[in-house]
Length: 521
Image 1: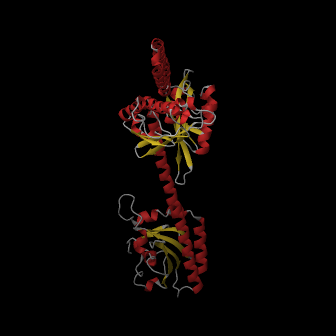
Image 2 (image 1 turned 180 degrees about the horizontal axis):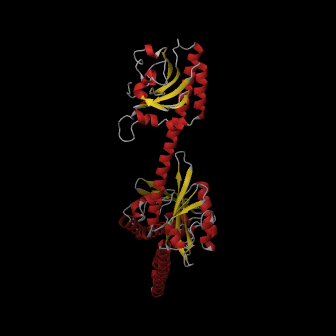
Image 3 (image 1 turned 180 degrees about the vertical axis):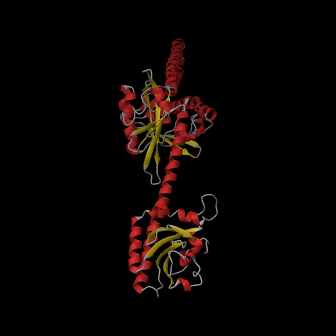
C-alpha cells in the first residue's frame, strides 16, 4: 500500500516537528476507540450484511501493521495483521473491489484468511477515503462461498453505507479536533490567568476586574491585605461599602457613567483600611474590548495617595500664607505710593498708573498660584481666557464691551505676569484714548493657534478716529514690548486704522506653560 500524504492533508503537520503527520497520527485524529462503541455502526454493518446477503460485514481501518475492525457483523476477532488484509488493497481503489473467488486470485490464494478461518471466498469492499483523499480502510462484505458478484442494488447500497461511515467518522474527527482545541485554549487561558494573578499580586497597587456589566469578580492579594475583609466579601456591589459614606454617591455616579459610556473611570475617594481608618485612594479603570468594539471586561487599580494628599494640603496652607504675604507687600507698596503723592501732588497721575499696574500684577499672582479645590478661582484656573476675563472685568458692562473669541490655552506663573502687564496696558490705553473711552466702543480679543505659535489679536472699534501712530513711543508700549518679546520670546505688531487700533501678538506655545504640549487643551 502507498502511504504518501494526500495533497489535501499537507497543511496538517506533525505535533512533534514540521514533518507531515504519520498514518497513525491521522488515524488517531478520527477517534477510533470511540467508533468501537458507536451503536449505529453495528446497526450499519448488520443492515449491509443483510442487504448483500453475506454472513460477514466489517468496517476495517488499516493501520501501519494491523487492520482493526471498529464495527463488525458475523466475526469474533477485532483485528488481523495488515499483511493479510484484503481492505488494504480495497482502500486504494477508486470504486468497489470485488473478489468472486479468493482461491483463484493470485493476490489472496495463499492468504491465511483464505486458507484458514474465516475461510474467505467472496469479498467486496468499498474504500473509506477522507475528504482530503487519505485512504483509511474499507467497508466490506465477506462470504465463505464463491459468488459471481453483487447486484446493482447491492453495489449501490454498499457505496451508500461507505459514505455513511465516512460521514460519521468525519464528524467524530471534527468533534475531537474541536475538543482538543478547546482543551488547548482552556489550558492557555488558565496559564494566562495564573500569570496575571501572579503579576497582579506582586504589584504594590490594589488590582480588580469586573464583568462588562460592572459586576466585580476579582481582587488581588493587595486589596484584601489593605482592606482586611474576607476574600469574596466585596464581590458584586460590596465594594462601595468600603468607601467613606460621603464618597459613596459620587463613586457610584462616576462608575455608572463609565459603564454606560465606556469612558475611562477615574476618581479620588476615601477607602477604609484594615484598621478602620479612611485613606485617600485614586481609583482608575479601563475597558477591554473585542474586535467588534464590545467591552469584555474592566480592569482597574486603587492607589493609596493619602500621604500625597496630606502633602498637597500642607502645600495649600503654605501657598495661602505666601500669597497673603505677597498681597500684603502689594498693599504696602500701593500705600507707600499713596503717601508719596501727598507730598508730591504733581505725581498723582503717574502714581495712579503705577498703582493700577501693581494691582494687575496682584491679580495675575492670585490667578496662577497653586490652588486646591477650596481656593480655586471661579474662573478657569491657569488658562489665558480665565486671566483675560479677570483682568478686563472692570471694563465690562451689560453691553459686554470686551469680547474674547477663539480658543483657550494653559498658562502658568512664568507667562501670567508678562501677559497681565501687556493686556493691562492695552486696556488702560483703550480706556484713555481708544475704544473704551467712548460709550459705544468695543474691544475684541481673538485667540488662535498657528503652527507652534499662539496668535492673540486685539481689535478696537467704535472709539475716537485714529489719524496716525503716536509720534513718540510711550512707557506702556515699551513695557508691552519688553513683556512679549524679552520675557515670552514673541512679537507684537500694531496697525493704526481710522476705526481703531489693531495689535497682534505672536507668542511661542512653549512659552505659555511648562506643561508638555501633548497635555494642553
